[in-house]
Length: 505
Image (cartoon, rainbow, N blue to C red):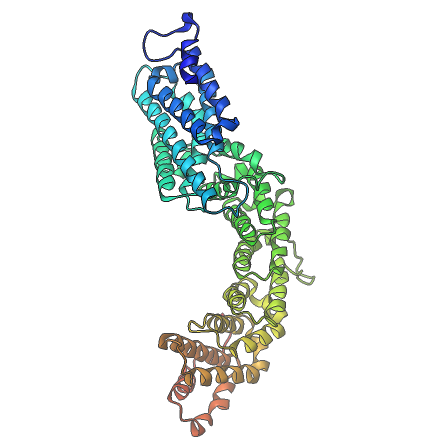
């Protein structure tokens, strides 16, 4: 073996009497293994087996005092380089569509690499407990980053992982946290206390070469490692890393593949939630985020639209902090209004149920956010509400329930302007009540009950804001209607408290 020749040819003056090979021999042996890992030899079955046999034998034959001795800076750096090479060796191929043998091969490599990392970490653990290995922390500093990236790459369920590789990677991550005295991944990344820096900067430094425009798709695991790692760091620690995390997040969100867009949007959303507004407003960062996210609303993918709207709803309060309004002038159009206008434009002709549900699900939040300013969009909201109440939405009736919630909020916030629309809205609500009452489909009874209750609440609110007009319009219906569910709803409206006219929320 090449390892044997490297150890035999080490200079006699540097040979050790005990504890395994000398420092010079260790450096030479690790250097040779590093060279072999980066050559074509590592891709061949026999060559690969020989490399891992030699590396395992070298780690086992060397006492921790040799691996982590005080004067062993060169060995520590060499260990770090070997760890990086092992991570690269076990990385999934660039083609994300690879299946079967390609991915099973990656899982096999990950198991081999993971076992080597476990041996190294156990050496660190032994050195940590020993009084004669004071430099174990320095050695761990070089190993921690590459081992963490490897562990996250292979511990999450992905096309290139197997149950065995996930178990080994998870075990490596647990042992890494243990020897680092960290109770969680978040503590490992940000530091367990104020005096400790944490390793987020180191991890981002390792990922950076694979997170630029030209290289980020070379390793399909990189985006997942970045996203998962980012989610572990929250406020107040995340703001100091803003310049490191924004460019990759924007890059991933700008991809043509929907799954990458969603991944990038979630990274941006996490940043919005965990970075102070002042930092996001500095250098116009918040506006950059808004325009990057807003453009995704033109893509008719319901999962993407959901991620975008959730992110925007949390970004609006930050954007509005930068707006200045003088009371004697017209209130400027906010970004929230711009998004609502676009949503309503898309909602009116939309016929795909999943997209209709997504839009309807988020509409109440926009009405709450805008409050009285919703009155600017009353005509279009009325058209959308009426058209959506007419269409059956499946057994769960999510869209119609959310539209009824939107109508309730609309009446509460814009009640002075709703009274002139009472007849139109009353007809739509009565039609809905009759449709639900006669519905013989598979819609569960609790869903029907919820629909009837929400519609009844809307009628009561309409009656309040129209000074009892709804009650008078409903007065003659019991004479010609025999449906018990419909009559029950009308009875509730008629029996509603007379506690004065409606004066808003």
